[in-house]
Length: 214
Image (cartoon, rainbow, N blue to C red; front, side, top):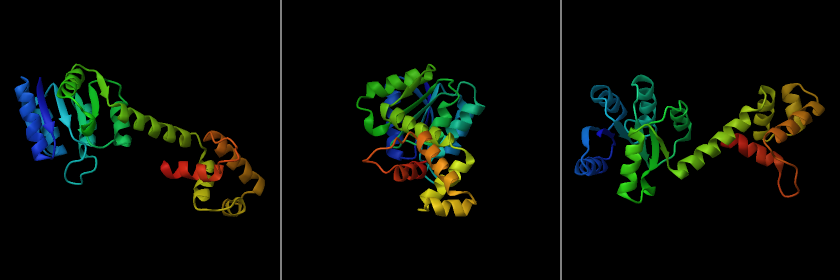
């Protein structure tokens, strides 16, 4: 395979180059930032790119955002994200096109070199390869987002005021609603967030936690 590597750690980058060369693959470019990744993929059109997520200049999500841009620009651009972190927001966007040829592995969880090379080959062949931990965190994030997406704009306002510690009467005053209307909104929020009444849980606190986690 012809491979581009984007990894800001010089030691890890050199190690990946050596590993792939020893296994008969050709590393056509090894770079350290998102802009250089984009330039290398446009120039070399590799079979697959290995991309770290957090790279210069901000070390947050440059690799992931560059990957999304490349997938939209370069037909058949296969990307294997190889990171220590799970970034749920942009990772969901990367997977949303369902075109295949994408993977996401966590560095600390790859136990065997053969597993890594197998994943790389599968991504190059158009498959989707995800670490189980990545799947778990993406699923959790999606469930949270979907739950709040079901709230109406007014319910979101009510929940936001609940998060500020406002009582129902204070919420009613702030939104110029009757106390009964606020109670109905709060009850609807509990239902949509799947928070059944129980003696052991404070649904108001749980609803606020869902809001803050989102």
